[in-house]
Amino acid sequence: MVGPIAGRPVRVAVLGAGTWANFAHLPGWARDPRCELVAVCDVDEALAKKAAADFGIPSVATDYRAVIERADVDVVDVCTPSATHFDLATAALGAGKHVLCEKPVAFDFRETARAAELARSRGLKTKLGFTFRYAPAMRYMRELVDQGFCGEPYIYNAYEQNSQWIDPKTPLRQVDVNADQSQIQVSSLEGYGAPVIDIARWMVGADLASVVGTLRNFVPERMVRATGTTMRMNIDDGDIFIGEFANGVIGSIQTSYVTVGNYPGIEVRLYGSAGAIIVRLVEEFGVAETIKTARPDDVEFKQQEVPARFYPAGGSARESWRTLFYANLIKDFLDELTTETDKNEGNFDDGAWVQEVINAVEISFRERRWTELPLPR
Ligand SMILES: NC(=O)c1ccc[n+]([C@@H]2O[C@H](COP(=O)([O-])OP(=O)(O)OC[C@H]3O[C@@H](n4cnc5c(N)ncnc54)[C@H](O)[C@@H]3O)[C@@H](O)[C@H]2O)c1
Image (tube, rainbow, N blue to C red; front, side, top):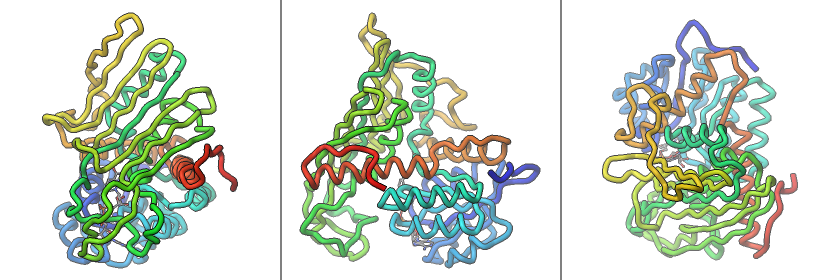
C-alpha cells in the first residue's frame, strides 16, 4: 500500500461535471479542508467551466487523459455515465492515482474484480459511490449491530424505491438505447439495488450463498435523454429477490423507481434474537433519516437520536441527503488516504461482490431458478 498523503492537501481531479457531481461529489470535496480540487473535466466544456466557477477549481479539461496523467493529482473521482466507469477508473489506477468511482465500475463482476486487482497490485485505494452506507443513521446502526444489539441475526430486509421515473415523460439517463428490446435489461436492480446489497453484507456479516429473483418492466415507453424521443425501453423498473446468506440469515431486497415515495427511498431492517433495527433514509418533511430500535420485551419501535459524532462538520438530519451522506463518504476516504492505515471500506472488491449478486439475480430470473454464489470465474 502506498503511504499516507501527509503534510499537504490531497489533490483531487473530478471527471464528469453533470447532475450527481454537482449535487454530491463537488460539494463533498469542497467541504473538507484536507483536500483541494485541482481540476474538473467534462466532455461538455461548458459544464466543466461552470463547475470550476462554482467550486473555485483552477483547471478545466475536456479529455480525461490530460487530467489523470498530471503529477499534481492524487485522487481521480469518476462521476461520468456508468458505461464509461471501467475505462476511466482503470486508466486512472494505471496512472497511479487513488480512485473514487460511481457505481457500477463495470456491468460484469469479473471486470470489477480486475479493476480491484489492478488497484491492489499498485497499492492504491479505491472507493465506490455506495452513498448510503455513509448515512449517519446507517453508521449508527452498524455500530449497534457490532455491539450486539440484535444478538444473533435472523432476517435482513431492504428497499430502495422512489418515484423518480414513474412519469414516462421524465427523461431517462444511463440506458443503452441500442439494447435488444425483446428482452428486459437490468436497470433498477443495478442502480438502486447496489447500495442495499452492499449494506446487506456489511450488516449481516456474511456473503450471500444463493439468490432467486424477478425483474419487471412496468412503464413500457419513456422519454430518453440521449435520443430526445419517447421510445420502447424494456428495462427493469421494479424487482424483488430473496437470498440465503452463508451464516444462515435470510433476506429480501426490493427496488423500483416507479413506486410512489420520496428520495432516496431506502429502508433497511435487521431482526435478530435480541433486538431489531430499522433505518429509513427517506426525505420526509425536511428530515433525511431516522433510526428506530426495539427489544423483544418492548416490541414497540422507539426512535433513537443519531449521536453527533456520526455527522460531518456542520451536518444534521435536516441537511439534504445528497450533500450529507456524500460528505461523510468523502470524509471517510480522506481519513483512509491521510492516515497510516490499511482500512479501505466500500472499495472495488466490495463493488465486485455486489455486482456478482446483481449478475446472479439476473441469471436466476432468466433461467427461472435459484442461483448459487460465488458464480463461476
Ligand atoms: N451513488 C449515488 O447515489 C448516485 C446518484 C446519482 C447518480 N449516480 C451515478 O453517477 C454517475 C453520473 O450520473 P449523473 O446523473 O451525474 O449523469 P450526467 O449525465 O448528468 O453527468 C455525467 C457527465 O459526464 C460527462 N462525461 C461523459 N463522458 C465523459 C468522459 N469520458 N470524460 C469526462 N466527462 C464525461 C457528461 O458530459 C456529463 O456531463 C452515474 O454513473 C450514475 O449512476 C450515483
